[in-house]
Length: 71
Image (cartoon, rainbow, N blue to C red; front, side, top):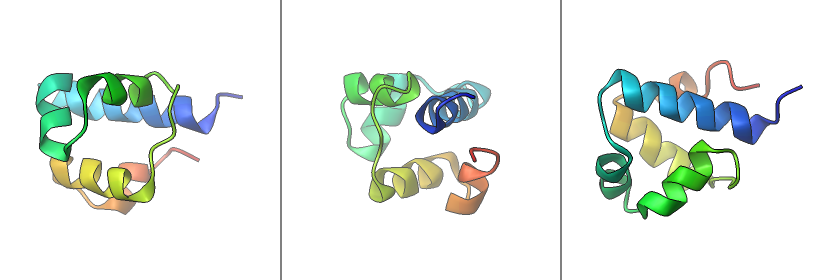
């Protein structure tokens, strides 16, 4: 079974690449360093609720849509 942080990271990367957004651009939009975003995408860091909300907003979707399929 794949860890929830890894699944979340894969979801972020998928949404980011589908929208042709670089890590640099996305991290800037949500007020985070690119290195921290990379750690989240790689499942090595667990983002808090505010970061998840900011990511969803940056992708133009609801938090529920953003977390769909993560569990």
